[in-house]
Image (cartoon, rainbow, N blue to C red):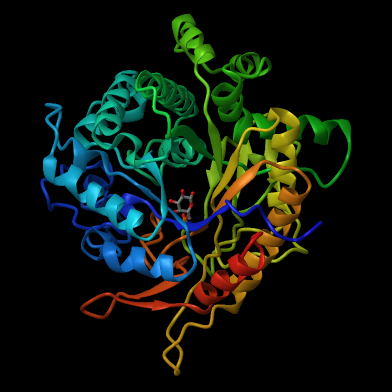
Length: 474
Ligand code: BGP
């Protein structure tokens, strides 16, 4: 073990259009579902992404700072409605030029762009037609992706179709705290299925271009599922939790088919699975991804479901310190989340468990062989403020990142095909529903200041040193 990753490892940080761009109604951009939701009375906290980190106007500064922080890659997303503002399909040149400028700026510093086509924000007009739940979503998404491939081609070497299908579908259609605020297990299944098909159809479009220097993948958030007791009941709960959290995404996108035990279990749970079409399954079987992006924050602990756990739901913590209930899931007759209270939790009730990155990478190797993997997000949520010396001393984030990164380096040294790591997030930004108090950035943003002043945190400098010390040939 040399404690270093290969010389061409990608080291960087990540963001998403709605969370960092701002400029919500500038440059010919159309309305997205998040613009619509945040401007409606359903937005109880009142925070919006209207300005966010103002990346739309300050991208040069942010890209320069990332490069100066030793990063050789950046992950960001394209806002669908900046490219196609309305249903007519007419391309918005101003939007295209904005992303071309961003890509040029990356090139200037030798930064490899890793670009997500859909990170939670879909057009408002499509949302009004049923959004992800309407099967036309898959075709509309593929049309938009085709335009992006045409416009940017090999300027983008790493294309991600969709960010976190599971989390997005669960929050939007099960818990219902994300737009369109629906709570229905039937809808959750339909939406998940349509998103997989949207991904598959986008991959079909991508392959038509025969790019030599661009690859396509998807970003999933794997929560490695573990159990605290090794009994047959716990192992059944573990498998069912793994199906619910991971395998219904990773199996179809990597192996081209849904797990054999999934549909029978859904039917047993009263789900009408008539939305599954043979022609879709045939198409899915022909698609494959070039790489897998894995967002990695924590693991999931599962235990057997009990009557008193109640109905299927996901309980997020969007309140932060003070909320008593820990983050977790109940899936009726499948499993319920378990908790190991000996481990540290963040203020939002999420377990911090660094070894999960190692367990996850080993699990992928076991189940899917040597598919290239990028850790597309990993980050530590904190309440933060500028200290008297004008700096942000985020030692807790440094300890968090060091924990996860040491396990990542170990996995790479032991033969896992992990090729990159992205800290969430490049700068502080909007956190879905939580607003701006929940910070993740390597760079602090003073939201009170007129010019949204950027201040690199201690973790920004620490990350730069870590990259140097842990890359071969540095
Ligand atoms: C992931 C999302 C990101 C980001 C992150 C932190 O699920 O892909 O967009 O938001 O989680 O989550 P949160 O802001 O809810 O704490």
